[in-house]
Length: 320
Length: 242
Image (cartoon, rainbow over all chains, first blue to last red):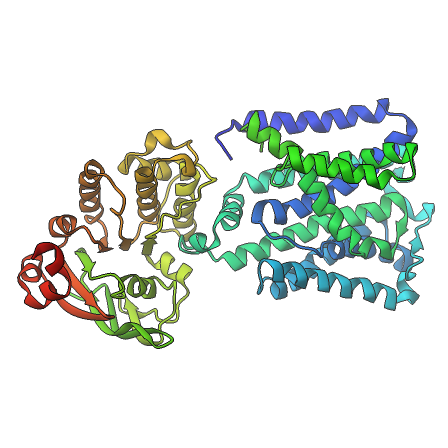
């Protein structure tokens, strides 16, 4: 958070959004689909980064917020026949409410205890999804039909199964999430969050109710992750319990660490990198996880603060 | 005149150790009070009880006539009780500007001050002579400047009572002179309570002195009275001022 002209910062981010916009028309079909997926999941990583990168709270249960959005949107479409916009809002609200409850309980702890408590709650959430298989489809999941995934606004209708519509929807969500996180971390509230990460005791002695600030951050993080989950359900038409499993709590942590914690664009870079390393190496060998592992170790060795975190440290101090 | 801060029978025990033991204390508005005493006398524990960083075992603390014994630390800060740490604890990875912006924006939110964050920050940095280092990471400042930054953060809280815990520790002599001038200036708007080991600083600054020993108040009075007090000389001054 060195002195940076806001114009330069916003110009960079708008340029990234513009680049992604152009890529829609350039990328081959396969990569266009992959990018849509990556952008939707990068929003998940951004929500995670808000809490982990800026407040310094390491949660191992964020799969529950993602899947709260996923199921909140998916089940209202599947069972209640809701339209896409209402279902999306339902998903975000589910995630925010869940985050509020979990935050009230889990913020009584910190450090390792916080990790374990969040992981346990996520596990409960996962098991509940399996338990209520009659509604959730259990480990089979549910497929949301194409007919349910059409947005009609006025006379026009947008079919989310169309690759370009899907790409643009994912980009729109990504752009909003990026600008919202950027605004949050550059605000007064963002400064308090970073202060809590750096030294919570000191922040209290400056007159801040750190628990209340952390709770707001948990809810904001949960809502952003739920927005990603809701979008994922609506864009890709599948709702499944594997998204609530512990793997999906670890993945955002990994993406954020790779891209650079507490950087605005790090979550996108990390998600992109992981997806493509996996994608490319799995084309050569069935032992691709080995190569992914080696790539991760090299990154940690040479870019301990993540790709963008290290770039910021060495060259671009103004990067947010 | 009503005291700004009073304590009655204030005690804090750590196991069998009576760190602070039944202290009755009163601080008048506008004064500069120094707390002195040998190591382990309970000075830091005492001011921590005032700021709310630790809870008392028994007794009460009143600020401006209201009982604040059970009030959490962050609410006391909003009432105007600011505490600067003995061990420098600025936010090392934030700039000097951001360090001071945190207390400034707090007072703006509370309505205790008006205006822009930037002007409030620069004002506090100018008063402590750090204005040209606003963009420097606090961790890269010299030790003396970090101490000053700590004071700037306290100042920016617009305190009615500023508690300074060994503020001159580790400062060079030249820095100490500036520091004395700064505290005198702060005392125009705020009551100052400082723990200090440097006797020349205490004698120059303090309107009155409270001497702690073994968790209790041993003596209280003007600098001249304390200097003349035989008990104090035995307990504390004896070694250095024979």
